[in-house]
Image (cartoon, rainbow, N blue to C red; front, side, top):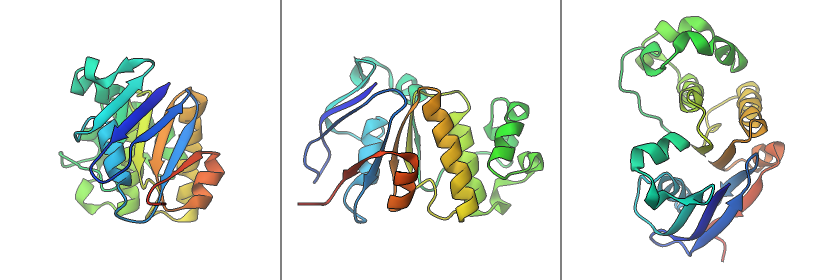
Length: 191
């Protein structure tokens, strides 16, 4: 269970919510309302006042690296630190089925990251984030540049994470995508 209690980030009013294992939350609102800041604060990447708890344990009682192994943040523009895709996966041969489920072929593993499309990089970043099975995924616009076929495949992967008792908080401007997933909605920037 992920619990956010009176989390105060910069200009945002205090935010509180609880998600059980297998549940998801879509954070929506106009650009500049702090949606990405919320995800980064939950991931312990940016400072915030208030509490964030996973299964009753405060993030302040867990080292930052350990917290981020359990609560994984995927940025809208994910970072890449090595030349090829393969170098970013602990078990690249073990992800072949998941690559196919996202419409990617296994040969993408040996391609330089620099030549991949934005959509390919986003789908690969999602797989990379899920590789060691974190309990919580924090996804910042995971379908923004994707076509409808790829969106459907990403939705299926997210649903599989939820079915495995994972939790997902995602930032999106796509209310239809949030509905398709059956997520609760947290609207930021509304008076």
